[in-house]
Image (cartoon, rainbow, N blue to C red; front, side, top):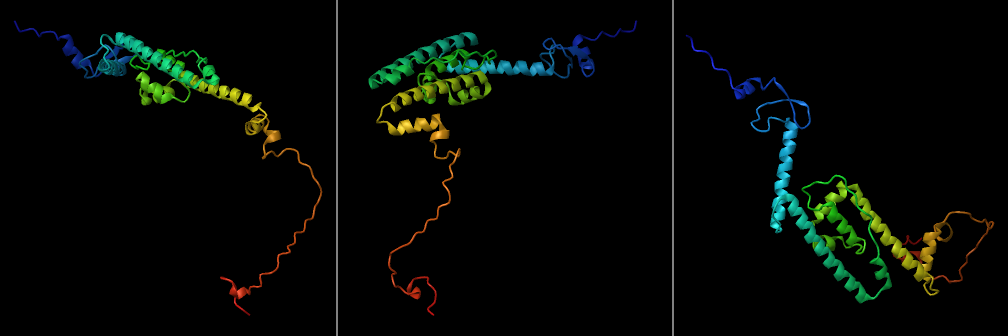
Length: 256
């Protein structure tokens, strides 16, 4: 009897049908061609790349946290890292409070009572160590320590590059920082206003008057003007002539 041909195995069928055979991606549900991929054949090329990207980011995040002394799964590393940063934030705030007490200014005591807005970020990268919780801790410090961004970031172990990236990426975080800045300005305005009530604080009082009602107090005001009529003014001099001939003066004309 002639030898019967063995049926092709699934791997061989896939190799033949790959250029034309359509499959359904398990992640996004779209049709795709198998192509030449040896791994992740159950998902399309786009989902395959996204999965590899997430896997790579997870690996880099774990490696960064391991260098900082945190081990375990990525979620456990993040949790331990947040606890460590929070402890550092409390130490920084305690030292700052002691410094403000040393100055003994009542305005500093008012500054320490300020609270930031509650930060809400619905979608955040799981591999970003500057988590929403740590962003909230940053705001808690920044609202009491205005204009000290670099000091806070250095103490929390957050790079300025990461801070700037997240400022641009998360609108709610950027808006929260602007809100803290407005609170700082309002506090300065209150202090300035109370100082201006002192009869001797003329300069500060004039400044606030110009800012509060520029139409009345600014020099550049171009509102109502009053016509005082035409006025002719003649200016004469009683200074005698120096008696120096024109040709004797440097750069003068020729003598006639």
